[in-house]
Image (cartoon, rainbow, N blue to C red; front, top):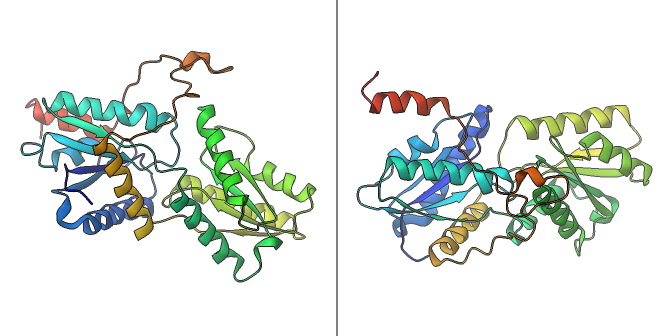
Length: 298
């Protein structure tokens, strides 16, 4: 590690208390791993949960460090990473004149993530050989075609060289195929054992829904052995990847793929997105905080 500016981890947010708690534990893990190399490490959400990005920034030593690094805790460069989080950071620049952000790229795809997902799949297999199982990578889904294509790429990277019988992908919202549709497809292909691997960092409503739909399918199709792998979760390997993204940000080595970004070029079926202005998500705490700052309440 090279000593540098403070780090803010930015998550989407969840209504799951377990997910919020694990996010906060992970922020502490990153701070511990960074040690004395970083003056401060914080974290906040753009919506749905505390602390908000505004609260996280207010806890940082802004007066002493006007340069800060923000790493988005997202797996794909979808709308949150491309628009919502940068818009939130831009709002903080307005609240703190002189604040400068170095913005890191999303976490995936990365070999560390592939290895972690493979470990979770192996744990679900419980010693059964990989060649007996098909993998179904289940992601959040997006209205950004580039992000959905990236999930398909991750599924293919999981298959290549790891010895699984096959690998497919699906989405729990906003895109197709759905979890049940992808499981039906695997059944028609003759899969006798399927491991559904939720492609999520921490617990939340959506990964819980993935597991519930997989278990419902298993109950309705007793001839197929359907198992659900664990989430990526709070771990040292993930913390190391975050700090790698931090180093990229301060060195200017971002390398984000913009060639198929629907916000930059008119993609078929998504031409309305090209050039669309980006605004931050509404976080209810921000309204109360701004009123307090203006002297209109407690």
